[in-house]
Image (tube, rainbow, N blue to C red; front, side, top):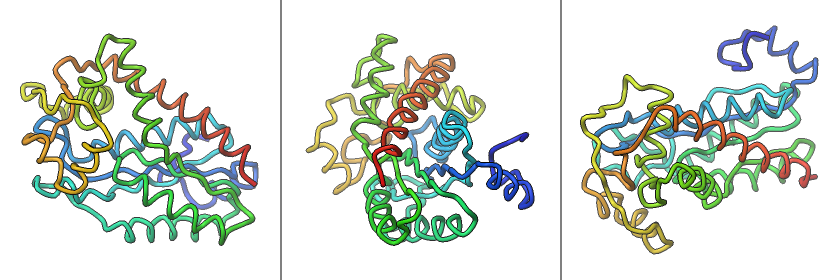
Length: 254
């Protein structure tokens, strides 16, 4: 096949792929929200899309369904351009993805959220769906702390601290977008945002009062040392780590 992206395929070739054993489908769940003054609002979506693509390729015999481009981003609504879904709306979209894809012969459906606000909704949706669709495996990578730790571990290998790496528009995400869409990055606007620790208390503050309560520019981290080549490494190693964990989840489920 020339591509595993179903949006680039026709129904005949998709059907033939499923019949030949491509019975796993991977879906990224991104967002449309501010990412500081230097990154585009589809940052989480393009990162989630490439992660889903690489994970599907690494799993083998997997196709990639179209990435969900809008997520739960109420805590970013004080910044222009952010579009946010209610949690129940995102869950309804996930339900409809599974309802549709389950009709075509897919046996494993995997969701990859790449935006923090989507993890809880994704987990809740999967728990509800798995009880309804007992003949197929439905999983999601919903361990946000492990997701962040993987990114920080890779950043530390480059001499980047956890605080600089950040969790939103910091060194890690900025490097990733430089690798994926350099022409959309405003390098002249690189500026540190919140550089304190990211604890459970801080996370609660962000979700209750919005990210602007921590950073007036909407950045948690420091993009100053972001680099395209590091971005490529972040994406590849993160995809490797997530794929390994997903294989374990697939083998542990009924």
